[in-house]
Image (tube, rainbow, N blue to C red; front, top):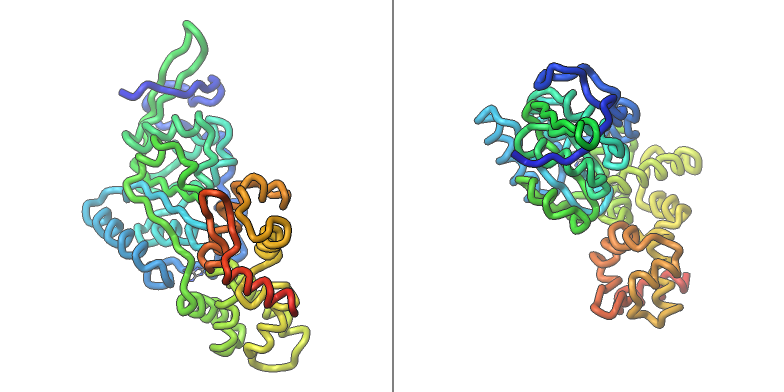
Length: 354
Ligand code: ADE
């Protein structure tokens, strides 16, 4: 039996008898219940409606079918990759395909042991628990999760010193879906407990165009195909950004034009106004490139130095801003630091001339 791990106050525990599922406890509110994200009605809820990420869909599709066939819960899933690529959406698709509820929370709201205990004991059999930013779990929360993930068991220590007692609570079978932009920041014991670990990649233009088309149709925004493509080009390979840009284009078109369809030229005008350039770079991207180019002669410059120069957190640079610049071939990570590539220089020159 795994040694337990977490010391929690008596008030955190349900009353005896042990092994009985506790009353509903004072758990952190589920985000699912308190914040309905704006795009929620737009999210696909089935593999067939989820555009792109074909290898992810294939792997998870097989796992879901197999789990349903056996009547088992789906194995725990870790999804990683830059923000906005559809990790939460995929968790919701998984739940819908499995025919169960998805409880959504994020690691920073599981600070107190009772938060995670409350969530786990309230799960119904085979439900999904989605934990965003899972690399930010506290040590105590992680240690509570290990036996929960492995043996559907919570090991709790009540009291202190010689009066400390260990209590075990049985949990229903469940699936943890963890999401992170920083897979490398997960401890290896936690990483090892996921049966499926999948990376989400930036989307190709065709998939982004299809996503914009789908959202525009759902919102009844009359976009031409070329206009969809223009948004696809400028969304940093990221559906969440594509959908946000679409809303800005819709605002712009409704206020500034009398046209009944939105053409690519309107998209360009609207997104130029929002300082999203022709390659989809926004102000933070350009600032990073300009600092390397103008203040460090194009690089190399170390991550910490760069972060200090920009007043940013190094991990935000590394996991949020840089991945798309690397993907575009505008930036390179070398052993001696970050450098701007010749494509990056050309892009900077082209926008600085304007
Ligand atoms: N909206 C956001 N991401 C999507 C995706 N991958 N497929 C369909 N619609 C989406």
